[in-house]
Image (tube, rainbow, N blue to C red):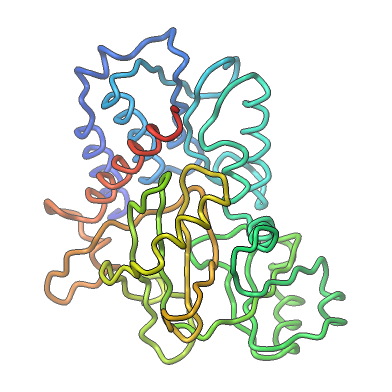
Length: 340
């Protein structure tokens, strides 16, 4: 029930954030600027709604005519914005489906954002790490296997991380200290049924990583995700991690931007870490995603944790309101970059 109430409040807030008078003035059924609404597909999600409405708000702020659609059918010679998610696919391996959708739209002489090129980096770790290696982007050593038998024959050094090929939010990430426990997990779990490629990655000695969100040549958001435990575990707040929005490593700012340019995408969020948490060493890029879940800056109030703050429903500066504002801000910048 609390989730339903929160979703209703988020919808109301997003609707109230739109200038509906300008919406009516700029809405044009003949426009080639199209927003394909994605939040109504499959399972509803607040963030999908925020991105869809963020595009609407961005067109209104730019005083550009636009129209709304519920599908990609019969769209030609247009500029299309959408919010890709796993709900566009019936397959567990949804990342390739999203790429196929974008490519099909592009074949009709449309420009779509995110594009098929951008979606190559959306929860697609095999492509991502191979691309990093091909462009000389420093990242933890990652090996790829097609079967359990290949791993049985492989000479592995532990500890290692097993990563789900098409997962996000620290899901499907597991630490193993020896081959027998790894093989036992792969044989008895559903992991190999979910993912066609088995990714094994060198475990870094870290207790924090940095999320850096970039649009064009601007860092629009950063925060540290911190594991306060002595033992390794994912740094996401859902695993008990904390978040800090201070101490941006300015000495690496140009470094982040230079490597981001190698991706040839207009927007993305890097996860960056340093071996032994030593910022004097070269950063290692853990992942990048062309569509991400931005966490708004947290204003501590008493003993409330970040994960606890996310659950608060009422107030001027509750999580869903500030996240909506943040996504609107990022969508505005994304529209300006991609319309060039």
